[in-house]
Amino acid sequence: MPIHDQGYRRYGGDKVPRGRTWVIIARSGIRSMIGRRAFVALLIAAWLPFLVRAVQIYAAANLPQVQFLAPTGETFRQFLGQQEVFLFFVTVYAGAGLIANDRRANALQIYLSKPLTRVEYIVGKLAVLFGFLLFVSWVPAMLLLLVQVLFAGSFTFIRSNLYLFPAITLFAFIEGLAISLAMLALSSLSRSSRYVGILYAALLFFTQAITVVLRAVVGTTGLAWLSFTNSLDQIGNAIFRMPPAYDSPLALCVLSVVVVMGAAAAILERRVRGTEVIA
Amino acid sequence: MPERDPQSPVVVLHQVSVRYGTQLALDDVSAAVAAGAVGLLGPNGAGKSTMIRALLGFVAPSTGQMQVLGYDVAHRPLEIRARVGYMPESDAHIPGMNAVSFVAYCGELAGLPRVDAMQRAHEMLFYVGLGEARYRMIDTYSTGMKQRIKLAQALVHDPDLVFLDEPTNGMDPRGREEMLELIDDLAHHKGVNLILSSHLLPDVEQTCDQVIVMDRGRVVAQGPIADLKEPRGQVFELRVKAPAGLAPFLHRLSESGCQHHAGTPGGEPDGLDDVMRVFVPGDGGARELFALAVAAGVQVRHLRPSVATLEDAFARAVGDLDEAR
Image (cartoon, rainbow over all chains, first blue to last red; front, side, top):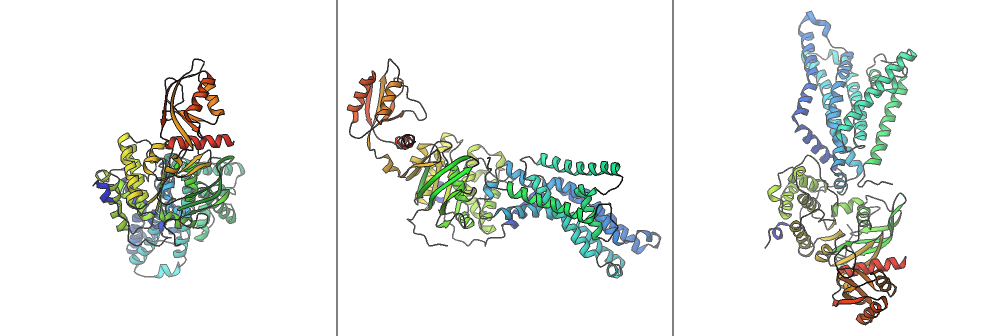
């Protein structure tokens, strides 16, 4: 009897209820990224600012000479601002290939021939990048808050800055979601993750450069909303109750980010299909 | 889950049309695919892959209704995909995975618990002949191995129906033979219904019991292969010498309703050097062929009655469509 005659048997077990396939996709994507040494090194590097801030908080809590290092609400906004450079690298490294690699290997038709919806696929892929972005923004910021309580030995700071918990959470989630959606949409446009990474960087730097030029021309930062990152900064300052970083109206900055997210969703709806239809 | 008679059609299409922009890929197709092994036969561009993609819900038809395993494709695509397997035509895998991880991952996506998915992944890889290479990265696989792993991922969740789109593409003769053996085993010993899309007649003839012949987006014939091969006339192997060229003779053959094609698949009949196969409808038989040869001024050098093959049935079906147009 040939070997294959003995190999195939019908499956008699139970199947898992549908609706959680995105978790499988997200888990696989996260595991795949964590298996790369360079990416782990990037994640470790992204936590170095946390260590520095933790040492500052410790020093401020224990050494009267360095009281000027004591954290304020602004400290946490600044920390999240510092993390943006790591968010950029993590986004390019972990996000560029999320859909582009699947398109290159024709994997979409494999995915979508299984009992999962396109939304589940997109959410699964989104969760990979979103998770890593939160890991380098929200998680260290919240831990920093915890560290402050531990080193200070009192809840005084927390009590007087209660807004920090929701502010950190809200801003980190808005930032992470907007960046993840934008990168995922770009990733769905190409089969080359390298090209997607370059495109993302070019778009960020180009829009930033435009706002700098416009500032020189018109003399104000009223058009800063044209840059995605400027808009996020403006929203961040508003959430942390800080003075606005630019002259642009907050509503326009919010609209700018919402438009980017909407456009990204529309691109994903169009590009994530089981078969590429060329009309 | 709808109760389904095992003998009822696994797939039903009713007046289905699919358009890619201005291009009509499926043109008012109605068909009922019986349980067992069914071949979807036709030349490239006939609409075979489009039909499979439409059945999987990848492309929406502009008109018509489809049912797979009793489920309406338009309303219950997920239930269908949970019970079918799909082996795509093009090279397809999930990058950055070794074979066993890939197949297990596909099993999980199809609803198997993690442990079961991994266990079945190992079994499937042994079944398709990749047991020894199951820890290798798929990117390093040869074309034949990639075909096999596509079959493994289509089978890992134990589907009731498998769509195989050109499963022997790019395989060497030995690999192709092994793949056909696997398909035959699945259909005839393991109780898996399958739809095999191919432009290769021998593949369909070797593995399938029924066939749907497609051409230019339409179904031109369907039914049991044995019935389709049943001639409504006689088939002859013929070699002629045509001093004035073969064209007048071929023209007369066509005019009198005789269909002809080269003895070698894919070739063109060139008369003396090649044996052509001629289907003579009705009872005219050899006498009619001789009369046509005389009228066209060609000498018959070889004439032998032949057994009808699926290729004859295919040529006849496509010929009928051409005449209808």
